[in-house]
Image (cartoon, rainbow, N blue to C red; front, side, top):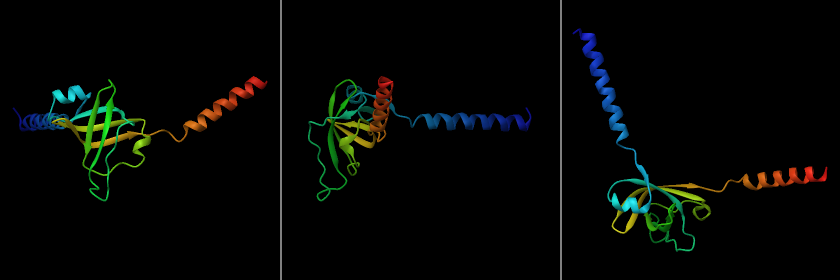
Length: 138
């Protein structure tokens, strides 16, 4: 075999190795029951804030501790602890995606992503109502 063929094979092997190493960092989506089964492994959980439950955040006492209760898409409630400050407008979020792992009976979140209500929703509703009333008046 020529030296060029050997170099190409080595580059292809390195590329395959890099791709495999990158895919190992991806986390899967799960509900809280599945997260308990995968204790110690990082997962993403999609759900919403249980607004009737208490949130614990006291920036004077510990600005890097925030806990709350979240309900996943299947309706399972879970207490979540986040080692960071409470995100701004957290209570107004429509949907949460938390990345982390189960640690005993607590879900330890490493990241919190929020889907907040759109500031344009009211404008769209007003526009649709105006359009409907104009057509009705014709």
